[in-house]
Image 1 (cartoon, rainbow, N blue to C red):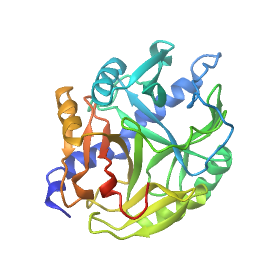
Image 2 (cartoon, rainbow, N blue to C red):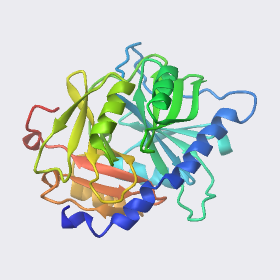
Image 3 (cartoon, rainbow, N blue to C red):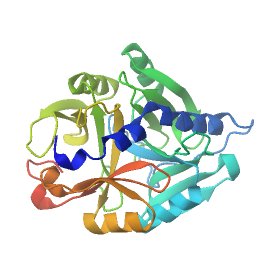
Image 4 (cartoon, rainbow, N blue to C red):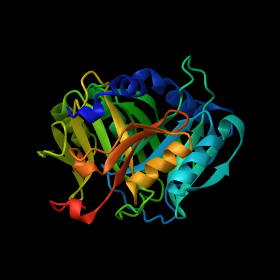
Amino acid sequence: MPDSLSPQPPMLSALFAGRYMRPVVAAILLLLLAGCAKPRWPAITDAPSGEQDPGRWVWAELITADIEGSKQFYGAVFGWTFDSLGSGERRYTLARNDGVPVAGMLFREADDATGQTARWLGLMSVADAGGAAAFAAAAGGRVLVGPTELPGRGQVALLADPEGARFGVLRALGGDPPDLFPPNGAFLWRELWARDGAAMADFYTGLGEARSRRVDSDQVPAPEWHLVVGGYPRAGILQEPIDGLPSAWLHYVRVGDLDNALVRAVEQGGRVLVRPDAGIRDGLVAIITDPQGAALGLAEWREAAASGGDR
């Protein structure tokens, strides 16, 4: 394991620990169950096509106790803009990157003893959220929320894989967002840190329509598998990049200049957990937390570094 990661395992372990998912589940349940009139959720794309890409990661939600602080941070670091819907406990914030929907924000009051309630949750496209939930349960995972219909959004379920990593599945009304290469400010990559990479690759390929392939590289500090949909890798699985770390998904946003993005993140109250290291993905990735404690990866994409045909 490269020395660059060794100073931070206690912090990373705490951030990825399963107990911090309780506020996530509670926030989603609150929005689903509060009141008799169900709120209408914004669609995940402004360009509905009716087409789906099962297995592709198509959305992300930030659960946080400080919506305004999160808007300030992500607006300054990535240039996102925001549409706010509802108020109070039902408030929903839609984040846009260059006008295109990129993520949502859900409000959840801080009630954890640590005060750390912010967490990113990724959602994978599926042909049938109910079928995906049934598969997950039969394969050793858990169904945490749903499946249920969200007006305006589609059929969704919140699941845990057999190692406990939380994620969502979604069959979106109107179809998935256009399958374009992510611009700066959009989510570029999703990465599962797992104890048994091969078993988790089998689980996620069975869940959707992705296929997996083992990847060997001296630029990755652990055994790795890619989840491939439509001929392109959409997510990765790393086997124990840090000893003892709970299994969890990490989501990466593409940035044009990694060093500048890290400076902006720190200026806005964020924290750098893992700094760029030339021995890991050519020094083009880092891990930060926002001021509320949500972990997020940053990745600078350079064509020269994109060898092997992966887009």
